[in-house]
Image (tube, rainbow, N blue to C red):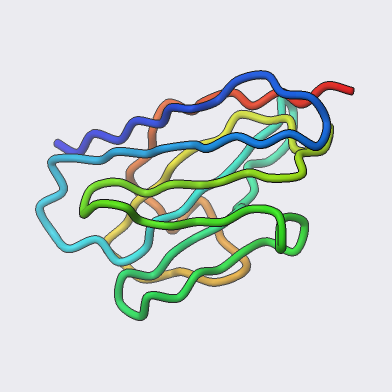
Length: 125
């Protein structure tokens, strides 16, 4: 079985920063795409950032380009740095992993099979 777990969420004021971490284990086949999604209550889950292990390229949604950074600091760990946070960034953030490389600026949740339980990010003014 594959286990995915996020951490690092919390409450921060407008303009603040947070660093989210995602650890995954039990993944037998080589991972190809490491991604972060976010979801507000009553809205669809949206892709935020992704990293292709095949090419080393990073991808970002237009709404977070220049503010968020995705990276990998270990074989089984992916990070997401959130800077210049805005109230619209408030959401539950999820880590997703898949063996198929579907990494792109536009991500689809249906392409990812393994998910964490989420970590809450709240931005207040």
